[in-house]
Image 1 (cartoon, rainbow over the protein chains, first blue to last red):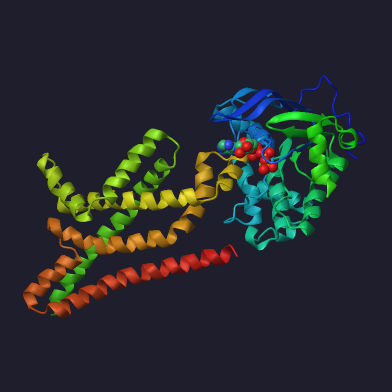
Image 2: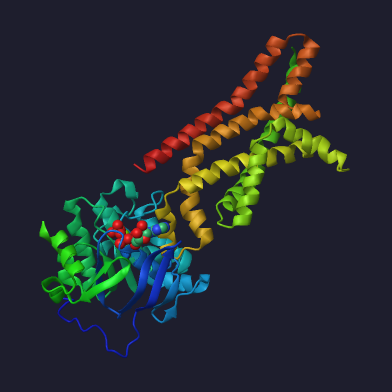
Length: 257
Length: 213
Ligand SMILES: Nc1ncnc2c1ncn2[C@@H]1O[C@H](COP(=O)(O)OP(=O)(O)OP(=O)(O)O)[C@@H](O)[C@H]1O
Ligand SMILES: [Mg+2]
């Protein structure tokens, strides 16, 4: 289990993600304040916090879906700047899964999976399809490869979205509330997929309020409020003895009922 | 109305078809450019194309053809009637199609662009593979509607002495003194052009709807 061999990487190894003093402003609203976060290769991070606390903003800065305003972000050593070249380089290594799936509705499941590898990794069609078949099989949806997204259930769509991201062979996966838009009975199939990904050693940052998942998979749980990181810790300590009042209040709200 | 007159009408019809095709193709190509410029995120490009669209949507097609034909002649550029109306229709169609497609591009959910970005798809692929196919579906009813308008609008080319179908009808009617019959034939010919286009548009819409169900 991931949590059992939690000491992720030797201190000398280059971190997969390094955020230093990152700030994000929307006009004159400060959405992120002095974010310092280092994620080692293979580490699994769960990010939680109240609505509007900046969780999405934080992970969206990592693949430059939002440009950050100050500080620096390095992904696998590459300094993420404002130029196309580094943005593309970083995006090729960082997969993202969205709350609303964001599959391409006019393309089949297979085409959803092969588009980016063909266009930005330069794979041939046959090669891209071979990769896609392997990963669709992995998320247990290979038999639906020729369907369109609208013909699948929410849980199936989200698994396709995970496979689509994996087809780019990313070094990091970002998840932004991947189960929040799902009917309850479909949450588990998506979480199981994420757990198996974690077991294979993928570096992951997951924004989620699935605390069972956090307990099982996370090396660190990070709690954000008001655009800042308030507290972080190994899930065992984090859930048992949260240090900050705001963390206790938040955990009380999401675990309490 | 004998065969000679009917043949004359058919020659007019040829020009109407040719002019419509020029409008479709020229308007399609430049209209796409206008739509992409309108959504480019480049303030200057967006403002210039917005002005262009505003100008052509805010004035009658008749005026536009006038200005291209006589206006350009005034500044010493004497254009053949065929070239002038081709330019006029292309300018007109690119403004309208540009605006229709601008709206459809913006109607494609933001998440689509974000997913494409997150997959490191570059601009060309993002547009060609992800955004435009969806925008095209959204725009289909409005696009077909405009193209049908455009076919009927070619009758205005008569103003600069261009003998397309409507003007050919006028001439034949003046010769034969049978305006009702002649214009019934002319109307039928327009209908034969426009109706299949509407049908085809409806067919495409149904097919897309079925594919995404
Ligand atoms: N494009 C934007 N323009 C202006 N403000 C924004 C924008 N995106 C986010 N914000 C603001 O930044 C803050 C952080 O938003 P963010 O989406 O990161 O929160 P979150 O923690 O992901 O919340 P949720 O749990 O609701 O998804 C919020 O106050 C939000 O209103
Ligand atoms: Mg969010």
